[in-house]
Image (cartoon, rainbow, N blue to C red; front, side):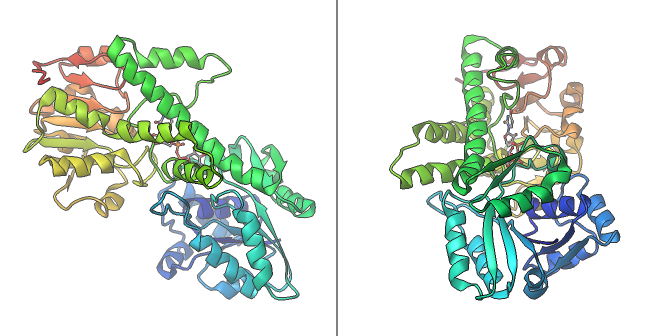
Length: 442
Ligand code: UDX
């Protein structure tokens, strides 16, 4: 079986590399020539732990190829995965332009039996629409079936997830095509769930919406904990021990970011609206998250007063550790607001600086280390829980900063640790620690 993957972003590239790793012949296709040249040299255009090594290994073993040529990509393929982006449109709905363009290109080149697997996250009904579109444009001798196979990969642990995921969902109206895709995936050893196409599409949105709901829920509980003197770490542990709730995705913090949760929750609200259903619960989840992303900044102003002219260290720029992705990252939103308010922002991130620079005002400075970022700073915000940041002892903040006000959006330190370090430490859903004299302005 010859497999082609269209789109070499986080999902497409990881899927292609891992399918090669379990023994398939894979061509990864992208319209971006320079990116393809880079991949041909065994260099991954994205930061994903373990990806470069696995890429090079499978290229050397002759199972993994890269091309920017449509004819090469689609001419001989038996199975074509569409893994192109579905960015957010202004009204929150998903922009399907790239998926449609891929479908039309496939229709132009295919001359035999081919299964098109849609990996991109697309609104319910899209797979059916793409199937119709392909049928209208394909060559007479081509026999093309569309199958939905949503991805559940987490950036930063995407390769691990490919081999250890909880389930693989295959949505198809053609049982034979479903069996072929199930066989392709069998070596991963992950349970396979077969559904109709629309249910598979909905599983993806519902899963992300549910996880986002868990996060906004625990963040709201954290906000109340702060006001009633409870500790969110203990509360989250206490509820997580109930098997019906489970311990995962109950880490309170600065809100969710990334390329999926913010986009997919909005798209699901929009999708529901299209069928005259107001998804009030999910609307609230989104509102809570928007507020949470700026909550720490509001708290800082409450304790420190105006940030104008102050040196502010921003620790972490990616939306979570182990990725260079800054899409919808709270750090980016905070940095822009801090600059607007006249703060002198010095940011640190081990891998995301280049991506952040494209989005942030030029006045933001970048430090090579945590210590350089916090040096003589009056306020430090911890936004991403990178090891390099978590491992910096609090006494270093105390020694290095002009005034050790630390606002931790990821609860990286224990309160006990903070209590003995002499810093003022404000975290999420836990009691504030006033290590040095602090004049509350409100
Ligand atoms: C997510 C889904 O997990 C994945 O299945 C889907 O395919 C794509 O979207 P990803 O966006 O890579 O993956 O990251 P994830 O680890 O899920 O975290 C998303 C955001 O939620 C991050 O900003 C993270 O910091 C935040 N988060 C996660 C919390 O604030 N608390 C938690 O308990 C868990």
